[in-house]
Figure 1 (cartoon, rainbow, N blue to C red):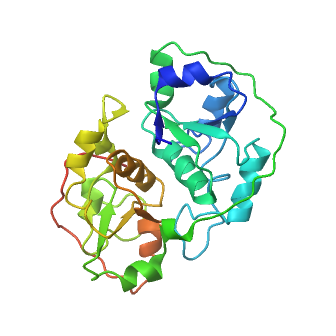
Figure 2 (figure 1 turned 90 degrees about the horizontal axis):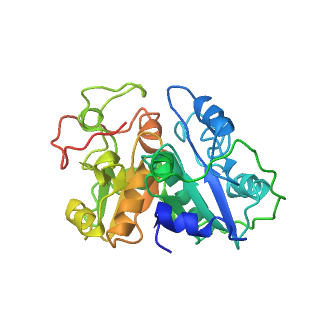
Length: 285
């Protein structure tokens, strides 16, 4: 299944019995804002999943700011939201798709294949005059049987061991100034994983929508041929946006460094590079 769905195509499926909508709006600056926006208005039938509370595991010394939940915990969360292995899930957020991409990746990791992100998110939905409601649904819980795919993810130890492996390419999805180490508004150390190239997730978009596949193929041409491709960001969220873009570009099998930069810098011995040129002028947070 293609990772994106257009507003018009979702409108045509709104009454489908297998459709489950997930509202994933979230603000790093105000973690309560997304839930408040959902309670005020959302797509009909949508449930809300919070990045910190529902889409991440418990914080620890290592693992990053948004560590992956265990497969069992994640399965319990999505099952309580009325999602099982037969569901067609469409996730959306405010518009850029960053947190919706986390939902997409997490469900794919758990084994669900029929999952998509609404291209353009809530902004595109409203621009098209799509219906909204403040009614909060209570879907009957379902049993979700997780089948987590270990090949989709890497951890610190794996990446550290493969830093100089010519068959591994690493992509950093953060803003260029964070990649270069000029600023670091969140994590305690600035810079990037040595050898990583910078392809900020915002550069995947044009006019609020994902760029066409041919444009994305051009964007990722420098890394697409790597036998193993790993993507990271600040905490494993916006990197999933690059993973969607790679799929649209025809690149399959790229892996997520789930802990990302926030995990990397939690290891005192982790090497850090700064100041290397970026491949792309897009910006991201």
